[in-house]
Length: 208
Image (cartoon, rainbow, N blue to C red; front, side, top):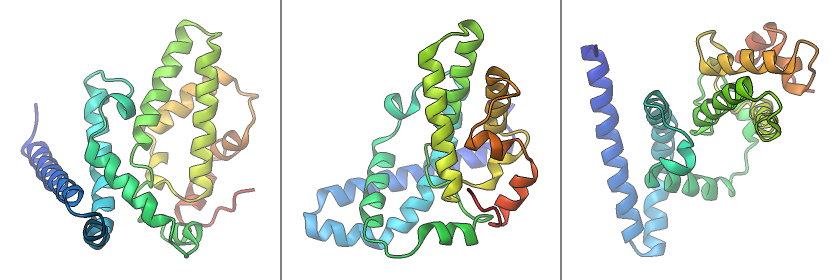
């Protein structure tokens, strides 16, 4: 049963999404030069919105049994906001890693599709419980492992992922069980020492 708080969150999410969908449409209808100047003014707000709200859309999608969110369900306006942000970021001159490291406790995970990748990794773990020698699933899980470690190295993921109830930790526990206790990798070395999470959360962990 949904509480009033749940209802308010859903309403807020829908209102925000409707607003940003219209904003993206408006920019796309403007002449190129005018549209570029217009979007630059509000792109930071749009990026914050995307990083806050898209994980909620992802959670809803997988809760309802969805698969492959990025290719099957992702909204056009999320894609466009991300594309514009990436184009804008090419011109950035600051040390992004250093900035994230200083503010890691407050950051929103940079890749707004992070949780979709986590959910897909969990599904792959389920596949491996049925067919243990599924090489394709193992390959994809290794690629996900590398992806996560690169995000961590860049301090580009919120330390909230280390909360015990998070699906990321659930994935890690299942993956570790699949790989065995003797498995070593850059991510495994980091994850196997919980004190690293606390250091990461305050920007004090130095990745090798």
